[in-house]
Length: 347
Image (cartoon, rainbow, N blue to C red; front, side):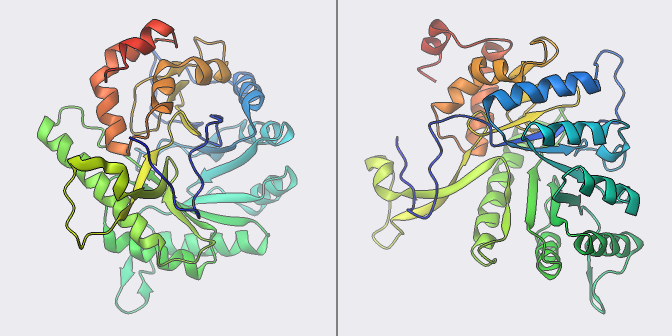
C-alpha cells in the first residue's frame, strides 16, 4: 500500500539519516549490571552521529521518573553540550528548570545554547479564580520562563504523556501561547507495568492512537509556527484511493483523512542512559547497544535489522509496536542480511 501526501507536507525521506535523537543522558535508577556512558564515551557517540548527519539532540532524563535526576545534575553536562555544539550537532537540554540559575543560564548561553526545553508535567493546572493554579511549582516555572525570555533563549515546553488528561494538556497549550513558546514537544510513553494483561495493553495502545488523533485536531487550531506533536511521528494525509476496495466508505465520507507514521529508524531514534539504541522510549527493544558497538551509533543506524525493516513500512505508532512484538526474538542483536530480510518479507 502506498500513501500520498498533501502538498503542504514533507514526505518521509528516502535519505534515512537521523534528524532528531532523544538521548536519556541521565537516569537516577542505579543498576549494577548496566553501565552509563562516560564523558569520553559520549564524545565518541557524538562523533559517530556527526558522520551521518547533524541532527537535533535532546538531552533528557528518564521520563518515567516523577522525581529524580535532571540532565543538569550531570557534572559533565556542559562539556557534553559544548562538544556537541563544536562538531555541528544541535544540542538542546530538556530540564525540569529548577537548576537553571543565572550562572547556569550564562554558561549555557556562552557555549552556544540557543534553545532550552522545560518539562512542565503537573505544573500547569486549572484554577477557576486565576486561570492557572498559582502553586509554588507554577510560580517557579513562570519566573524561570521569564528569565529565559529575558536572556534571549528560545523557549520550548515538554510534556511526557503517560496518563493523558485532555483538559490539562489544553491548559498547557493555552499557557505555551501566552508565554510565546516555540511549541510543546510531546513524549508518548507506555505503562512500565509489564504484568498487565494482554487486553489492558491493547486498550492502552488504542488510547494512544486516540491521543495522536486528538493532537492532530488541536494542531489545526494553533498558530502555524507553533510546534505541537509527539517528536517520533509525522502527520500526513491518507487518501481514499490508497485503501483499495477492501475498505467500506459511505458516499458522504471524506476522501482523505489525517494519519501518522512512526519515524523510528527513518529520521528518529532514542538512546537510553545505559547505551541502548531504540525506536523510541516506549519500545524497549534494542536496535543495538553502544557498549557492544564501540560507541558507534553510525554502525547501529545502518546495520540494525529492525531499523531496516521499519524503513520499508509506513507503520503507525501502534502498528510499529505490534510488528516489533511479533518479531522481537528475530530482531534481537540481528544485523541486516539478505537472508534475514527475506525471512521477514511475509510479515
